[in-house]
Image (tube, rainbow, N blue to C red; front, side):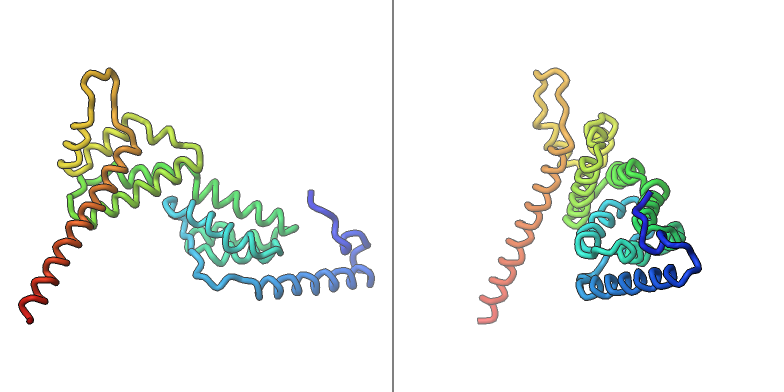
Length: 235
């Protein structure tokens, strides 16, 4: 149960009660205005209920709103405004809950349990890198895979599901989806004399990132050579 306000300490309907409500309202408006002047100017994330975006959304809300806006009712309204679609519909009723601390807690509970379950988010990240057609060796596709794997790794570890990254099913599916040249490179590292040796998620990510860096280097060399050739022919 939250703290009892001054308005709740006097009988309702009396002039003292009305005055207490008015004073609390003015204080609340003052807090909202103060927080409004302190509101960050950066672009805020919108959340539509996509599990893949839940971790980034909550982290962004904590950094840009919770740490900068002291009034809980203002935090709640910002949270509701930052949600769109089904996520917005699922928590908009929280604005009628009192006190604000309970309303904010309820909103987070609804988002966490109904729209952004942690395990569902981790599963969605895993599916994004282990399901679908194999990745082709183009730099753009390798770069996207590296980014998706990094997001999956960060989210899984942050929420205590890093065991999913070590699961043989996850590693096997990820391996099968890699370009053939990366599969061969990983196989070359396997020591046949080591019983039970298997690659790790971290090693796979490092291989993909290395492939992206090499592709960037090769592309840079080609562009540099092309520019030099154009310069020489124009003289």
